[in-house]
Amino acid sequence: MGLPPPSPSQPFCEVSALDAGFLDLPDAMFITPSKPDGITRVPSLAFLITHASSKRQVLFDLGIRKDWKTGHLPHVADWISNYGVEVPQDVVDSLGKGGLAARDIEAVVFSHIHWDHTGDPSAFTKATFLLGGETETLLRTGYPVDQRSMYARDLIPPHRTQLLKTDTWTPVGPFPRAFDYWGDGSLYIVDSPGHLLGHLNILARTSAEGSWVYLAGDSAHYVKLLTGEAEVSVGHPAYGPHGCAHADKELAELHISRIRELQDLPNVQVLLSHDAPWYKVHRDGPSFWPGHIPPL
Image (cartoon, rainbow, N blue to C red):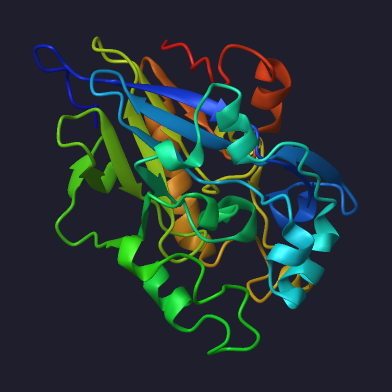
């Protein structure tokens, strides 16, 4: 279950956190035990990944869009209003702090297409959008095909969209399916089922010697799920059709168990998209662009 050893002159990546809004999570939707009325304020993080040699750059997620009240379908905006959203700085603003523009980004990898991860894709006029293959189902049946859908069928331009099929992917570490994005062992896109159809994570090598950052997306929303202090909540009907935060609770729990195996390996940092404890320690620090997360 170890991670791939470095090759001679091993390429690696620099991973930079990006502020992209805040929201309030009802604890009972995500973890048990929890207080029935508990609310946790969390960031919606995006990440810039820079290939250290070629300087090619991709984004993992886009966070929340600033104009969420008008930029989403009305019934989606109504749903979002339940979460106390604030976006003092979106992902484009965060990139600008380090002199980057949206047009400089080669690709955007979406962990999944929930509203707090898709930002405003229209700003990224030159990027290819990479999504898990099963996301095709959500987009094909999206609004207006299904008037009740929470996903817009035209979310991203089809001619710049790549749906990643997992049937030819190979294992990496504890994960059975992963795609070597640059083909040099520096960046793996990981099939991460359970939360939503097509959910993806990122495993990035952050030093030639063998340090890693694992971007877990919404595989878990609370660090307590990785430490064993809490379990995935069975949820409540008020929180949507599945009752809890995940479309498939059993698959989500299986994937969380694999992330726990990963974090037990040396020199691996695991970060969640809504990692409130990590954000509290590192906000405005060198882990955020134009800095990058120091390798272990």
